[in-house]
Each structure stands twice: as structure tokens, then as C-alpha cells.
Image (cartoon, rainbow, N blue to C red; front, side, top):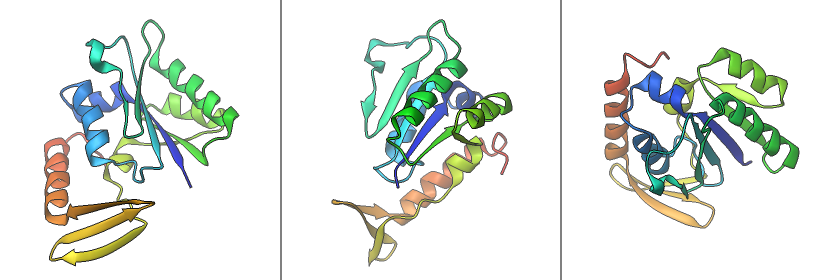
Length: 168
């Protein structure tokens, strides 16, 4: 089952106090809170890109900018396009904006709060312990060796840095 997450980028940056758009994009690419590589993420930011190199489109992470339009309008437009195409099993908008969340439901999507998205644990398709605190995670035809202590440490550091901003 493939999921498409649409993230309210500025809402996330404001809530978590993350330093920049690029840091949020890099977090999504490297830490993959969206889970499977089959899942896609579209991050929508208010305004224009700050640098020309901001044309992201890797690791199933895509970035849109609203320019003069409100990001909420771009999010709803993207949601409608995805729902109409019936390409994805489910579209989930990640925001703490209750008004946007209500609009998402009206247009056939699901919405979730930021803390639930960032802190959820993803279950790999196939997990085999290969050495102490190491895991080989296989999803489809890709296999990755993961240091579980490092992953837990990075995740804990992220939560500690942002603990006053995340409500679980």
C-alpha cells in the first residue's frame, strides 16, 4: 500500500523550530519518517525558493512553493489532483492547522498532526538482525544495513532538541 504525504512545510518549521527549509528537506530524505520508499512526500512551503538549487525531487521527496498563493491552497489543489488520479492508496496531509485539516477531509484526504508523523515507528517489510544492534532492512529489492544505536541516538537527539515544541 503506497501512501502520499503532503506536508505543510512552514507549519512544521514553525512548530519544530527547525532552522531552514533545507534542513527539513534533508531530514525527510535521510530519516524517512514517511517509512517505505514506496511512499511519496510532497513538502509545500509558503513563498518562493530561496536558492535556485531548491528544485528537489529525490528519494520520493518533492518540494512545491506557493509563491503569491497561500500554501494551504496549493496543498488542497495537490490533494485534489492526487485523489482524482487514484494513484495512491491514501493521501495524508501533515499539519497542525485544524482549518486546513477540515478542508483535507472535505476533499477526500486524511490529516495527521506533526508529532504523530515525526515520532511514529515504521515497520520494515523484512528485518533480520545481522549483528549486535545492527539490522538488515529489506524493502522490495533494496537492502540497507542500519546501525540501530545510531538511529535511536539521532532520533532521541532530534526529539530532545524539539521536545518543548512537540506535543505527544
